[in-house]
Image (cartoon, rainbow, N blue to C red; front, side, top):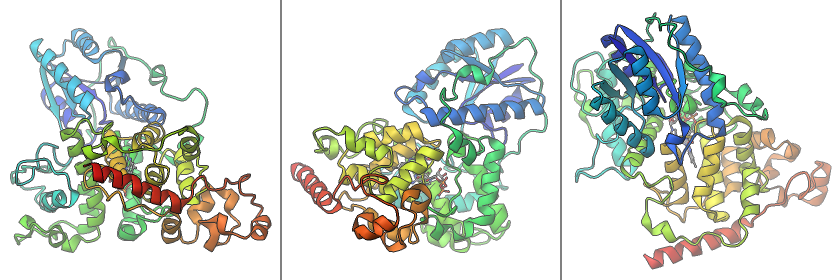
Length: 516
Ligand code: FAD
């Protein structure tokens, strides 16, 4: 029998359930990638994501060749392309790993139905999540809208499931009932007669070469993902609970684009963390019933090192379950009260452009936006600060920010981006209350105390002393002149008065609350 493995957002060979199922059931296994970006409309991959996809497909293609196989790349409507491939290869099975974006869920269901009607054995699998988004519900059977109770349910299961990974206990929520599989050592060859496109034919690379910063910052692909994880385990996981908030430090894992493209899966990360830092058998559920405790802190008492990191993976799961249950949220607020929020009126283009280009005159904001433009990634603390400035001080719709991130982030992810923006704007699940408005100067002083992040991305401010680097407009003219800065020239004067705009944002919020 011949099985097709339809690779999509699971660009890896280790712990790939669709590939494993095809290998277990088919004698001939044909890995295919189908390029049909419009099927994800209106969320077709942005420019930075396309860059990453190109590199990742090249890495996957080489890896498959080393193992004796070949990636068949085709372009065009997915169902028609799959049917053509099935006819050419005489395949009787198609396997894929699930995507969770609303448009792709609809497409995949349609394809599964159509192929099954053709008599093809079609199966989808979970490679991306620890917990399928429909699994955990509140006591009243509703999806979770608040992270803490969600994590109180999921957290203990992670501890328990990592501990019992080698046993055969039932795994109702967390897909860790078997240890993640290593990549196969060889793969069956793909017959020469089956042809495909070269990755270059997909034209994913930018036509003007703006990608040098991305090339310097990243190594897309499965090997790059594992290198990032190993570096994080050695250098950063022990201090993650603190250093994760300092944007100048390499204190986080930088695994987000690798996770988004499925070059590594969360099950693999969990298993590796446990192996590296906890040692087998020392976990909380060995010989005690703490694995069923409802208090994640108690469950993770002896794995305090890993807990803050696992919690972030928990946010990723939470975002996916939100998107699954509330598919309208990429464009509309989860909290309907915000549907008529009085966003800024008049000419919104100049402030939006200044924000996008990192020229707001607020140093920590500009540093974040320039890091994004240059590397395709922005530190989480900076993401929260720039999003607060856009939606609250500038009072521009969060959807504008989400769209810009979508095009510029290498980790642009519909679930995480939607949740991050709605949280920041105060209209989503678990929202930071709208009236909690970040003061970017205080944020800078607290999390970039020595101004290293600002100096790196706004070098025109580098000579300012630490105490003024986050508010150059407070520097006396003589000092600015000494440092070679003319506000409004080398570096912009602030485009917004932070205090007045904060008051206006609060007044706008009051209007929404009063009309509720
Ligand atoms: P680490 O701190 O090492 O965390 C590990 C992993 O956990 C991340 O790789 C990511 O997969 C997940 N994670 C961490 N924080 C969050 C979070 N708050 N919500 C959901 N998952 C999280 N993340 C994306 O992956 N794609 C996006 O498009 C995205 N857009 C965002 C937009 C805004 C406005 C905000 C405030 C946050 C956004 N995030 C997004 C979440 C977060 O900023 C990034 O996941 C994180 O900065 C990635 O860096 P890291 O891999 O070093 O994270």
